[in-house]
Length: 138
Image (cartoon, rainbow, N blue to C red; front, side, top):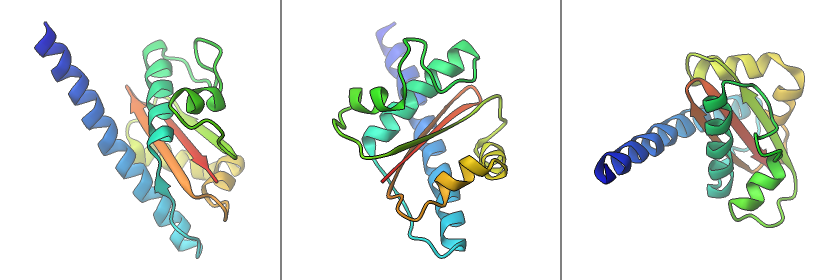
C-alpha cells in the first residue's frame, strides 16, 4: 500500500508539474506578445495552487474559496510565503486541458488584466480533474 501511495502521489506531482509548465508557457507567450516581461514560477504559489486545485477538483465545485474557508492569501501563507504583496487568483472548472482553460481566461477582462499586468513577476498553477488554479503575484 505504501509503495502504491508514493507512486500515486508522484504521478499527481509530475502531472501537476507538466500542467504548471504548460500554463507558464501560455502566460509568458501572451505577455511577450504584448511587450511585457515574462513571469517566473514561485514554489509557494505552485503549492497553494495545487492545494486549491485538488480541493475544488475533488469536490467538483468552482470557487476561489476553499472547503476550509481559506482564500488565496491564506493558502499562499500556509505554503511558506509569509507576506505576499499582491495575489491574483483565477480558477478554471471542468476544462479539457490547460490550453482550453487559458483561452477561457483570456476572454474574461478581469482575468486577462491579471495575466498582462505589467508588474506581475511570479506565477503558480495546478490542475486536478479538469479544475485549474492560477495564482499571479508581484
